[in-house]
Amino acid sequence: MAADNILQRVIEELRNYDGEEVRIMEVCGTHTAAISENGIPSMLSPKIKLISGPGCPVCVTVTAVIDRLVELSLSENTCVLTFGDLIRVKGSKMSLSDAKAEGANVRMLYSPMDSIAIAKENPAVNYVFAAIGFETTTPVYGRVIEKAIEEHITNLKLLTSLKTMPQVIRWVVKNGGGIDGFIAPGHVAAVTGEEIFKDLAKELGIPFVVSGFEGEQLLLTIYALVKMKGKGGFKNLYRQVVTPNGNEMAKSCVNKYFEESDSSWRGMGKIEGSGMILRQEYKDFDAGSFGLDEDHMPPGCSCEKVLVGKITPNQCPLFGKSCTPDNAHGACMVSTEGSCYNYYISGRR
Ligand code: SF4
Image (cartoon, rainbow, N blue to C red):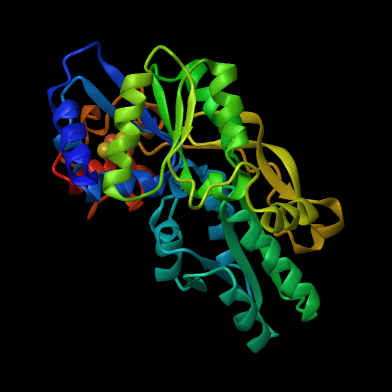
């Protein structure tokens, strides 16, 4: 059967599905955005629920990290380098954007590697990169340190809040809103390899399907997960990018500079073995990332329930009322990978 016909049949089956409810979670912020951009929820039967999990790095960063960045940005002779979305997330008192309005030195970057040239050009300024992210981004931070060592740069440090997927997925299965299948994160799996998700599927008895980011592939992934409900199992539909063992060069860069640690997640607290920190021998590159565990949710915000699938964004009483992308209360509405933001812009009310 031609590929177009197969896809048409998949879409029809997903639209007309009338079996038991299936709750499918994606744990990657880029999947959240791709699902929304491709209008996938509108193609599904109401009995197939798509739930966004804790895969948006900006959304899961606790307020203590924001507070530390704000404090650093207001310190003399110090500049905080950050990705765009993080700048607008409120800490316990203010965001980096608020601090910038008060004269703090905050600069937005598109790539962590740009920090090398900036630090080199301005040796009298102390730079701190807000190093947040998952397995996908951690190798780039390793490369930043490698380059800084090579080029004898001493005025660049990282404030890290680096997360890893397996432990938080276990946490969500145990404490979240009930999940029948996971869309495994394609970018993370490209680094780690498919094996960790295959092992999780076996351990948890819940199906995992590794997916890319095209609309067609996401639909095929959802179709596969609907068929696998209650049976467990594993599939990799992103074989052109995700191999069994992943990217060995990226993994060895991570292992050289970082080691596993406990990590605090917004709304979930500290989860054992769910993060990465700089190894002792590279602590000179750390800007005070330890013990940043406190988390203060904005009043009335339910991000902590949204992030683990206990409620959908539109079940938050503030959604679309006082909380919109132009006036975001919580990180899930600030980030373009956040579930509240994507629910809002795709018109799911
Ligand atoms: S809609 Fe706004 S207030 Fe509600 S959970 Fe999302 S970010 Fe928080």
